[in-house]
View: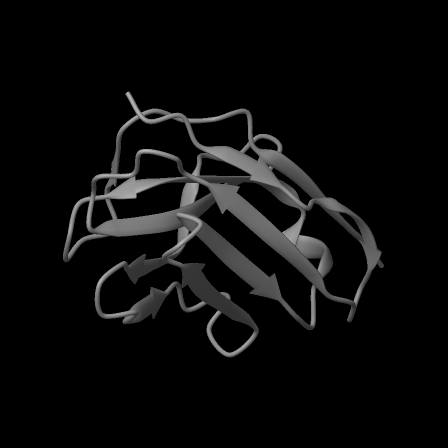
Length: 118
């Protein structure tokens, strides 16, 4: 199984920005995505990117604030998070996504913690 490694999380004030990275060596799936899990809540879809076309899709809660991109040569995906809100506090994960859906497919890494203070 492909092991994804997330990094870039941290503590930031509301309104600030963070950039997360997801290294996916040996990536084989055409769509990759970001998910997050806040304390006491279920893991939820954040956004995804089609690796070949670069087309992206976002959850309504982050649309206009978050941007997903990828570096084909490095097999790395990024999540640029701007205008962060306390409700964005969560552990963020990346994994493969079933193309055309918001359904994760594959293994989960350890995630990276994002904490937004008010």
